[in-house]
Length: 249
Image (cartoon, rainbow, N blue to C red; front, side, top):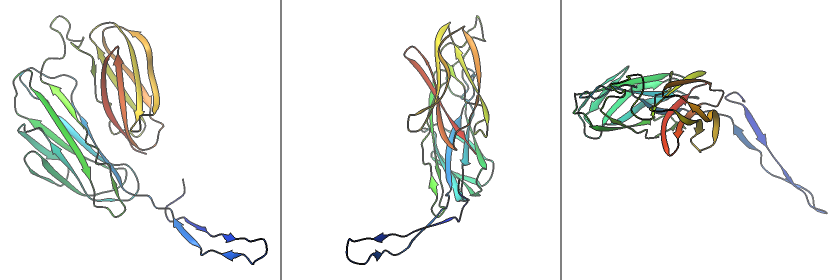
């Protein structure tokens, strides 16, 4: 909680029983935050057969200094795609290298990834790695993967009931406070919904083995946690779905 530039000065003396004390040189420590950026991939809830889904990659500077020459590398697993950044420019064609210039603390740059039509059942794996050249900066460099099977989500009998356990991307994401978590159940089940940090520590529990009906369910989480990347996990029996959530303070 100390402001940038706070100086902490340490010195010590080595004391003997009979000889004079020896003073050590003073050591200066300065509090200085750093740039800390992360990439989070978001995908839609519903996918139409024969159409590959649009994907959004959010690159956020979570705290500290300006992330100089901020950017993200996006790999689409060899699938043809068109990328459109909210600022800067993208080059290459799988992987794509997108640069945003300087990204101030607390700000987010976005890249929209649009695929061509794909046959039903096609699985796409997309990864994104955030980078920065900021002095003393820390780039998350956390590859976030999402595999998407191109198929209908709802059944023909009831389009509001998903065919399989589904977890939507949190909204909003990145989040500055409250965020909504949404999951779908193909049948009535006991559900466990938790949030973890990247060290695997539980930070929130929104459902603990509760019985829920088939269909879509929501929970609102007040993300009163430190800035960073978190993992939302929904578990029904041995079936597990996860999504990443970035929190900005």
